[in-house]
Image (cartoon, rainbow, N blue to C red; front, side):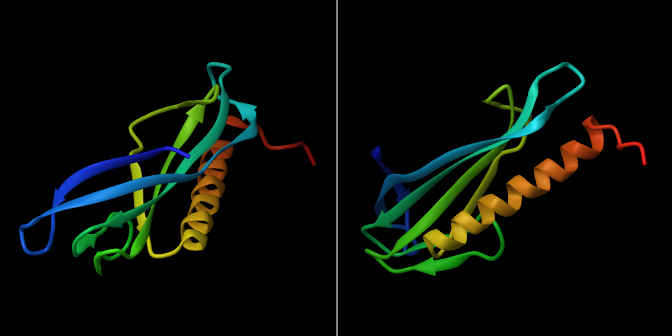
Length: 126
């Protein structure tokens, strides 16, 4: 597990230190290639964030307030080509629970697969 700290300005404009701990990293290969022959897929990282002061977090959905010492979970996810992040998709989401972040990662990967499949796979003959 990797742990990093960052400093932000909290709700009352005081400096707040946020400690990020990486919890879950994953990727999936969709099993098909794009027009350039690159394998299509999706990757994600989930981190737990604990702040030493009150913060307001947002990103996906509505923003929410978090008290000092309470954990929130950040999902960073992106489409991939040949296993490397691809395109201008900067998908950060803040979630209240780890399970919510994991469910959102699955939902985003499924949506990306569906979108890419429309572009890069041929319909099967009936």
